[in-house]
Image 1 (spheres, helix red, strand yellow):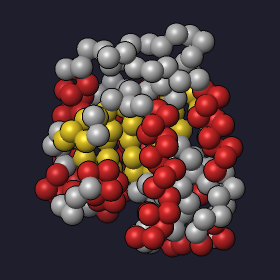
Image 2 (cartoon, one colour):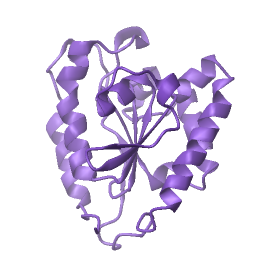
Image 3 (cartoon, helix red, strand yellow):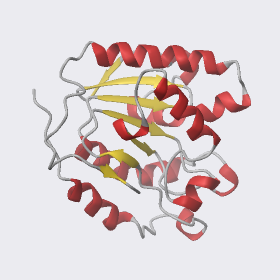
Image 4 (cartoon, helix red, strand yellow):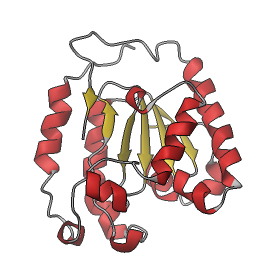
Length: 207
């Protein structure tokens, strides 16, 4: 089935709708809503946990050390940030980079669900426990699920560790690299992936 091609303005308009969100207490401590960034017609979506300090200041996801590692991991499978879309479960930074609270995830989830609906990715790579448990509706942790292919709501979901975890535990980087090989293999088995949309429809969302 051919992917529905979305206008860049549709995703940009949705960002305008939510960028001043006041639905939870995180709005009082954030600097910026971190909506997401990348190709609005990408077939591959990465979903992380929540913005950190650098992301909060810049308004862009994965721009710190974890972002550099993600960029490296993408390069190992011949992709760049411009080839994918990157978002988070939470759009605002939890103070002190603490874990997201259940109520915060519940409050913010409609935003992620709408992003997925608009982006219409064929493959989602969840990064870490929170994104994996949320999108797979499971209590199983990332240690047991990473690198597996799971069908969820008509899409292929491949969980992996959050790059930030590998910064604290370098032994996880090898597992991340293996998970990205699984991701690459899955993409290569779906020949419709990677086809360029029309020039008028393509573009990078620079949030």
